[in-house]
Image (cartoon, rainbow, N blue to C red):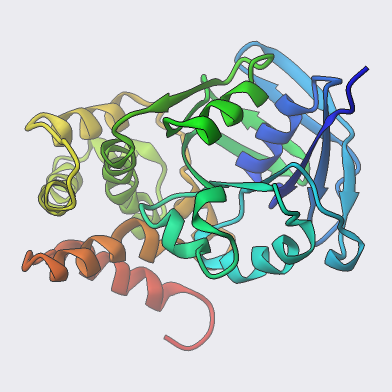
Length: 296
């Protein structure tokens, strides 16, 4: 029998715990969680029913050894923290999949991982963590990676799961379509209200403004974004369960740091390089940055 494929997952939050629990259902995969605090058991309530797993857990990077795959599921602002783990987990053939928000996956990890071994991933798994290791996955999960040898190998890891994992020949467009969803979702963090707030006409108008900027910058970056992108995003939020809480809203409610730069600030930053102004996204990023704990 072949040795199991070894996977180290850094950051077992809502997304990380869900992904780890699904992967751990296969005996062909040996999953280890890299976390600040021990997680004895993963329990995920999925649309297809509950799943559970008890993967190995490491809390000290010094105890880590090289693996076949590293899956980074931390928040974007915690890339330096993940790098401490990657230094110990990276072997001569280790591939590093970055399951994070934003559009700067490669640039974020280029200081620590050879570019040809980084697999950027767009993740759309609506999941909320009720307690450490206990997660509710609200609907079907989707992960998309760039086409190629590394992408195909990543997809193969999930063949036994109910997650829909695939490759794309136009990954830039995939990332910017997800960024459109994320940039508009900042209204929940601003108002501290779940998705029901998007049904307010004035809030919806703000979302359309944020999305218009995102589409303009995304197109300048090479993404294919049609004229109905903003409408689909807003209507998607309005049709979602009214009590849904997205991750940036949850982070603000918890009094922690937020991904304001990867969701909104990046649109203003990249817009500048193309001579495109994005004042609404800049304003949202500024307000959320100032709302974080500590000095503004």
